[in-house]
Figure 1 (tube, rainbow, N blue to C red):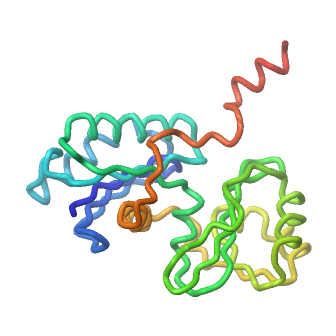
Figure 2 (cartoon, rainbow, N blue to C red; figure 1 turned 120 degrees about the horizontal axis):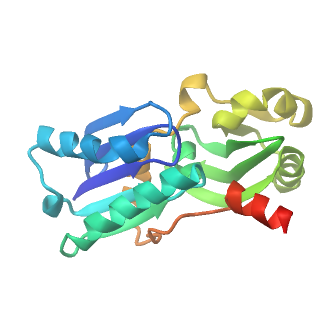
Length: 229
């Protein structure tokens, strides 16, 4: 099964080609949130390098967030367009917190954390056991302190923290979690090949998710408008 995975939820714009769980090729650009300009040329370059066309792709995987609202919409719209022009193609959404959890390969509890600024975050808790990532706490928007309280009431086992929230809130994690393990800095960004792997596992296990943006909180413009009203 040939899989095309699309990553646009973060500052990384990425596309990955896989044959089942084997990576064939990957292209990623870290130019900030310029995905509307970069995504289609990136995918075209990747396909041409591997002598493939969209109708020859068997499955499409897309990061559905949480993350950049605009980036998520670009990726989801692109993936849906590809599905529409392909016959009988499989597809699934994968949330960005699960993709981050796939950066960790050792069995145990994993908290993926994305910084939302001002002491807030997106987070989720997973347990990796025998090669399977099991969701314990689903993707959630909360304050850092609320996250700590929930995690401490859920498990006393060591927890590996991964994501940009590890860098930005390391002091807070250190002060509140005595069972914390920190992923290395290189693992705190979303990896498009792990997005593809997570998507492959969902398709293989008949656990696919719709290509629908995962918004855990309203866009800033909408929140500001509601505050004015």
